[in-house]
Amino acid sequence: MNREKERAKYIQLVQQMTGYNSIPTIEDKIAEYENKKPQTFAEKNGFSKELYNNPNITAFSYYCMLFHGIRFQRLEVLEAIFQDREIRCGNKIRTSIESYDGTTKSIWAGDYREENCNLGEYVSVTPYDDEWNIKGIIAPTTRAYEFNNFVRNHVFFIIKGHIDAIETFFLPWEEYNALKNSEIKHKNLYSYAHEEFLVKDHIPLEDVLAIGVDKQYYMDGDIDETISEIIKLMKEYEIPIPLIDMSTSKVLFQLGDDLTIRKSGFSQ
Image (cartoon, rainbow, N blue to C red):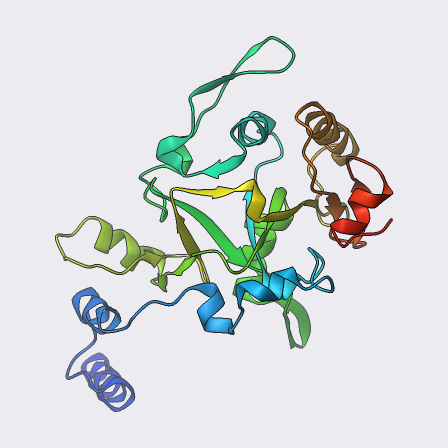
């Protein structure tokens, strides 16, 4: 009886807070989200394309940028991006590449494809986040945790925020999975990660300002050896953008002379 009373109180609270007559279902949530028009990252923040022509806006202007992470141990994906001169969606990632050293390298792109929120048709990107909650102890917010997990702990691309990156609507994992396995029709994009934006098909390297690592945050393996491998690839494929360390906001490597560095808005 007590449990029934508690449930009745909960339903009443839900009604007061949401306007629903019962506990909202996944159908209720999707119906509500489908009435919303998704925006791009630039639209949500008022960033124009001209902003990124400002010499004072560099890859270190993190809050104006979008980020795409690649697992450190999968530098064959990075090499494929260098060869293609673009970051491709999962369905367009090649299964193997001919490396500069003459070897054939396999690329397992399973987790880039249909089972993820990007549906294999989009490239996932996310804004910068380094916010912390202080509640007796110092702890990262959910968004900061996700940024650290998907970006900082990998080699990542720092991308101009004016690209056509469409916002997704957040659903907890259980609800996202329920939607995925349902027959509910929807036109908007959904994700179980906070602040995920999706770019259709590919992102050209022309829209990338820098390649980044975070030497202070990454703790799984020898990051210096990984950095050496990245630099070797950048030299081989003549990648003109800088490699930076987010923990110190310093340039680790820049192809070319001082003039190239100045034109990119960076200094050693």
